[in-house]
Image 1 (cartoon, one colour):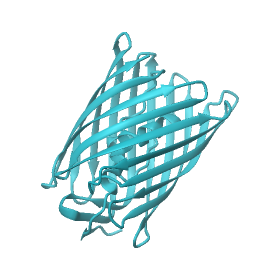
Image 2 (tube, one colour):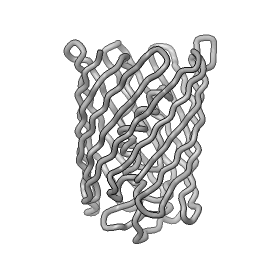
Image 3 (spheres, rainbow, N blue to C red):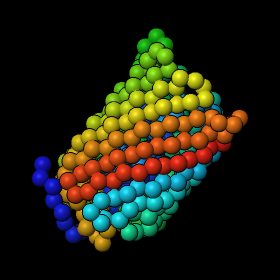
Image 4 (cartoon, rainbow, N blue to C red):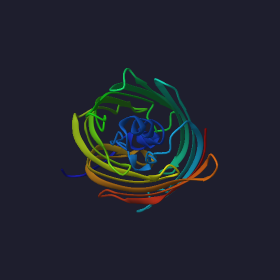
Length: 284
């Protein structure tokens, strides 16, 4: 696939930075860090194994090469679990590729039984081209095995930019809750971008280890193709390959208070991006 650089307005590039919102919420339901990947999900904090509800605040900084403009921003999240339902609410403020935008999202997981669950989520942007105007995701999952140690899920995603660009995708994942508090997951996303019917796909592999109830260590690798990605001044990358890597640590440090640190690295034929996300959370 030959990369293409075009001058056209769009928005999915940071749409998935609300991976900080939707993608991480979906990661929780998928048992790991399977995220919607057409939109730079390396920014999505990796799911942690610390149980309960929480509120958290995070700040991020990412250095971007070739003069495209560094990223910096912050987001707030609240999570409210119950016997059958878990709710995630997120607010993201981000400056990326020299443009600023905000986005809000809400996600719900409902457990129909100990083995079957569904998840739906939606987000809206402020109108900045680096954010989707609207995004919707949905999945259905099944837990298998005598200890429900296997989890499979399938779903769909729709992303609409502030211009004519849009994405429709199918997603699937398989997760294994292995012995010794280890979770391994692999997922795939097949995406069609319009106009042009540009097809792309990404493979997502993640691992999460919770050696104690107070600490979680996570890793994620994502690779494949992207349909389009908006940069500054209306320039859109079209049909290219990229890779993403992330490592994360989350630790309860004082009673119900946790600190988190995540490092990210992303590259495509046009630029590289690397940086950290720092967070503090209060559990209950």
